[in-house]
Each structure stands twice: as C-alpha cells, then as structure tokens.
Image (tube, rainbow, N blue to C red; front, side, top):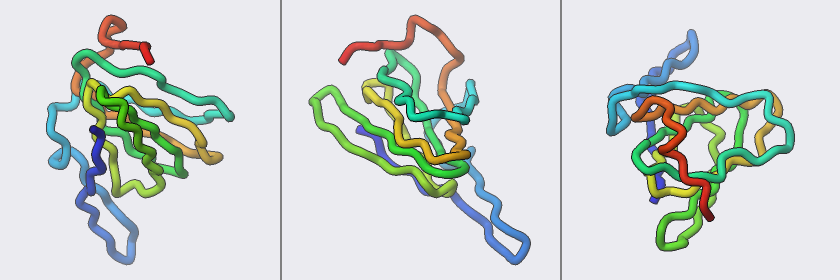
Length: 120
C-alpha cells in the first residue's frame, strides 16, 4: 500500500530547501509534473513495473489509492516536505486540485504505454 515519505528540509531566515533524492527507494528515470488542472480527476491506473513518488510542491490535491486487496485510502498532499510512495500495484487517482497546484511525479521507469493498467 502507498505510504507517506518525509523529506529532509533545511529552513532558515532565507527560506526552505527540501532534499528528495536520498529519501526515495529507487533511481529516478522520469520526472514530470501536473498543473493547471480544472475540476477533472486524473490517473485511474496502476503499473506493472513503475514505482512513483508524488509531491504536491504547490497547493494541494487528494490522492486516492486502492491496493490489490481492495483496501482504499485517501492521502491529502499539501506540504512539499511530504511525498507519497506509490507501488506498481497501487491503483490510484488524483482529484481536488487547488488553484495553482503543482504535483511533481518522480518515477522509477521511463514512459512505457504497456506498463499502464487501467482496470478497476
């Protein structure tokens, strides 16, 4: 099942700097971000191989995850110091994007259309 990750953050009077690369359990092969989302829901898939970490670096959104045992959980991402680790078997979708939200996705694999499973 998906789990939250806390990233190391350095804070001083100049601002905050969050470090991600040593906090995730895979080598990053793909990076993309989702933004300017209207009231749409995104995702509705799982993967055969790809592991992902998602971070809402601005604003907020809800991530819903259902595992192979049909256990369902909702995660609200609204802090850039927190990421959500999604395993390949985690069927997931995103909704309730706040205005100006940016959802960063770090993936263990490069894009492969055949890695996506859209079953529910």
